[in-house]
Length: 353
Image (tube, rainbow, N blue to C red; front, side, top):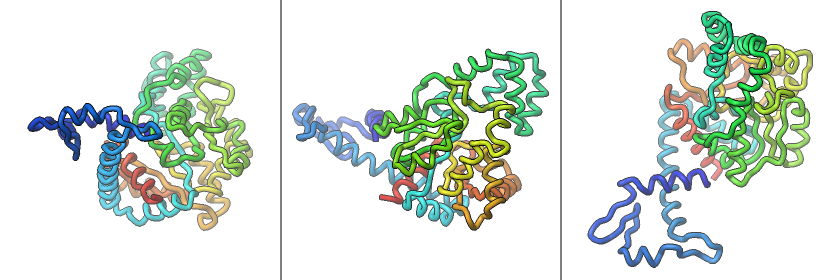
């Protein structure tokens, strides 16, 4: 767990983990004289592993997991979702859960959210701010993107590439995913955070498919390949990228490939939405259409880690809307996106240990 080893090394400098007392150097639960510590530095086993580091890291890791599971339990109790999470855990242990990753998992690494990006691009056009805000308030992101693309022309492609095509430092729960979900991943993001996260964990994807090639996903997964399915394409290529209304119409209507792919994923997996707002969009519409066509009882349940809405009334409304798509939310407190998702993922992973 390279990402946790890095965090462990940072924590070692905290006063609670490192002190000097009565001539002894105390690191967590172990203590040494200066001479003993000098002798231990660099001591390795036959495989070249640092014995002292491994001992201290294992102790820290056990404490870390305990804290995360305690936080996850508090979240589940707060929203009375223990039973729902148990069913998700059972599906996870049966290896039927597939992560569906949205922009919320890229934002901690410095990538802009879609709303922020569109507002920034609007300022480079003559589009009236109030008109753009009205579209965003109604969830009409496709139309907003289309208007900006029409206004900016080829400069819009450059803006997308500049914002999402660069490799920013990885941060947040995205670094956990290779350990919790070591197989295939689906995303609507344009950036390369998932690809780099899995490479850093020594679990590189054997194939990266975009929406145009997504019909291959089932065959590739049956061959036990680790697939990254980028439904809406890559920031660095405008060929298969989907972000404007015209592009959505092309790829999601009249039996288009993407709708068929989403239907196939709904049929075969328990999807777990991470970093997805799950407001009105084509992906959700395609899922709802499949549920209406086949029926709730004939499809796997899907789940989502979602921030609690502003009011109880909105929460109940959102819950009912998602149920129509056979998606069942696991809420977490507002303003705790990264830490809550991290805790819930740790608890989910530990269910299989």
